[in-house]
Image 1 (cartoon, rainbow, N blue to C red):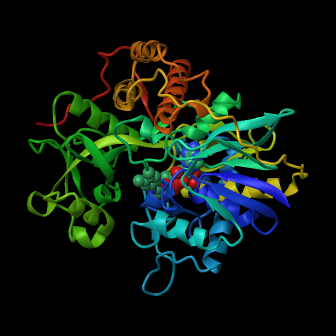
Image 2 (cartoon, protein in one colour):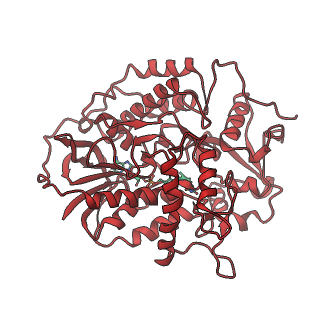
Image 3 (cartoon, rainbow, N blue to C red):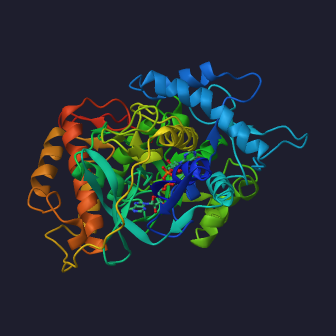
Length: 495
Ligand SMILES: Cc1cc2nc3c(=O)[nH]c(=O)nc-3n(C[C@H](O)[C@H](O)[C@H](O)COP(=O)(O)OP(=O)(O)OC[C@H]3O[C@@H](n4cnc5c(N)ncnc54)[C@H](O)[C@@H]3O)c2cc1C
């Protein structure tokens, strides 16, 4: 039986494993536990043109528009046609998407979708419901949890396996495979403000880059306007559906920040994030005023539970303290329509991959769908691969673990937020690269670094790729490249 190694236990990795388990010997290696991934945190839902009045063509048009037509058209066509088939299969297998009282599927509407096409489950806990459902269908798959991938093993121009170790700081070991699937998610933890799970630290992108595997669109990071912000830290996403229900972004004087902007509080994510960042830079605090939202706890049970967990007095003052933060990575490891990367026998699926489906800016709720489609397509391609006999796993010589000459994680995250964030200038990007130049993160032996140091080294490498690409490529929406620091994109709110 062919041996397939899947790195990452989120929706993409688990769904690939489900599709491969009947024909291959599949192992999922994941850095944390089975519940630690961005997939488990997804709130809004999964987009699929299943409603009778909707069509794949309409979904395709919305996806291309949100992606500023930087998308790969064939990848979008595959997403919107194969996606609904896979969702139907999941429904037939018993996936409990939310339904109307009459038993028909309940479709939600999100920003930039022209049709109600967002399926959700367990209210605003779709990601957990879907990922657990898929994990529940794994039968013959081996899980290796709390284990991190350090480097790819290559021979004869092919990927032959992965060097892994238990976290933290275990003994490195080679796991050989006929095919390796990267499903390690994005890089939100490069920034001090992020919605991402703590295990999502750009590792897949960094280990592909160190192996010379092609990357694409690394400048394109999506920032979400509203994260719960308390004492300078973020504690999860405040869904934009709350603004859809009438909430308004205000400052400490109750000034409506988006009042003079077209579409106001429901302007595209990047526009709102940019305005909030600029207003905050002028010394203001940011809040979401929910006084106009009727029955808030009933409509937003997940967000309410999070607010209560953090003792936010929103029932009294109707204000949620918020802050923009890093949310999603459009760029990543270049992959074709079947997830094949530039290195034979190495596949990339889900958020770590850049298959061109999201273009310059992701349409809301398209990423869970892409996890399913990219995983299914990669599984089909792997099923057709000829087997090769993997060498037996070997243990690598013991090395002395060290911290390396690296910045403190907090310093890197703060600089990344300031200089690689929503608004960037060429001068700031060059300063960032110059600062980064003093550290050793590129030509390293990953196995010689502690787990904590390797995380920083990986994030340094990702940040270099983002800064370099941001200087080379015009901004197309997700971030804003200003020619100089004084130029303002900001429309002053009404006092
Ligand atoms: C708060 C939040 C809300 C969201 N809401 C939605 C939504 O409503 N709809 C939607 O479509 N999308 C949403 N997204 C985006 C979506 O959840 C993700 O893009 C998607 O789940 C990514 O899935 P994935 O399987 O590619 O990666 P992930 O689910 O992030 O999984 C990556 C896995 O790789 C593991 N890993 C990382 N590095 C290593 C390593 N070195 N070795 C081994 N394992 C490693 C991680 O621990 C994790 O298990 C949301 C994201 C967040 C953060």
